[in-house]
Length: 133
Picture 1 (cartoon, helix red, strand yellow):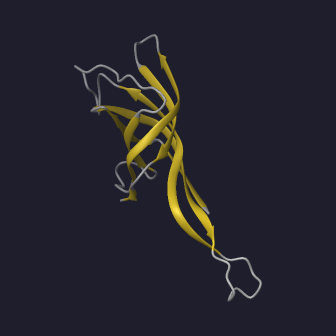
Picture 2 (cartoon, rainbow, N blue to C red):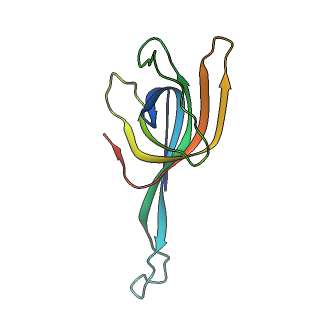
Picture 3 (tube, one colour):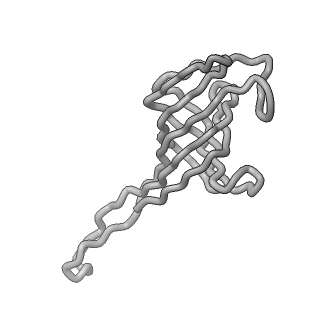
């Protein structure tokens, strides 16, 4: 069982530094546990158990504009880094969002534009609680 969402709005917070999201994709999955028993009438039965949110994010560290940190420095991110994610599938103005309290980052790619913007791309997996607000 899975549910897929995409968007372009949101924030990533890593070690107190906020990155502005330019695009993201997230899939919610539930681990299915077999519950077939003597009352199943010969049919396979399964129930959902543990859920997880996984996906990918592209983000930028901004020194000017909305969400900017003009005095800050872009964060150092490695595979295994923990982050907090807020992902808005319908835009920030709508106010509904996924919040991933703790996400583990993987497949981290970092590039820097000629203008000096730090661009980040990574995959994530939730660990622990995540909510739909």
